[in-house]
Structures are given as structure tokens and as C-alpha cells.
Image 1 (tube, helix red, strand yellow):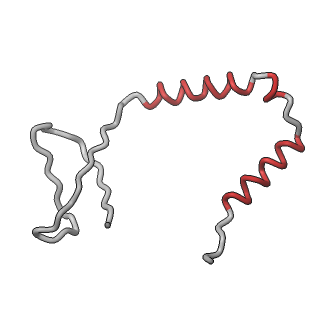
Image 2 (cartoon, helix red, strand yellow):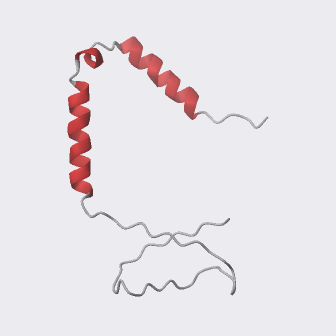
Length: 85
């Protein structure tokens, strides 16, 4: 299944027109609309606040530089692509 992505602003919610698509007449498609909530800055601020609160927890503050180094190594290992079997 191929995926196409486009962004548009809804002018009339009763009718949405998509044009210049690489589709064939008669081809069956699934359509999914993801509406922007419009309050991203509020969500970002909430996440920053939660992050600061989490960092203030005693067991988080007790992490040593060695723990951070070990964690960075774990992340690098996880992100390293593996060869196909």
C-alpha cells in the first residue's frame, strides 16, 4: 500500500478536494484526516513542566555521570541499524 501526504486548510468542511494525486481511476483508497488541535504550544509547555518535575525527583537526581554514559551507550546501540539476517 502506498502512502501520500498533503497538507491543506479546510475552507468548506462540507467538501474537501484533493488534486494532483498519483492515483488511477477506479483505484480503491482509504482516507484519513488528522486535524491539528491548534494548541501545540500549550501541550509543549505541559511537557516541559512534566519533564522539569520528573527531573526534580530524588531518584532521578541520584543518577551519576556513569549512569548517563551507560544510558547514552544503550541509546547508540538501539539506534544502530542491524544487518538483515
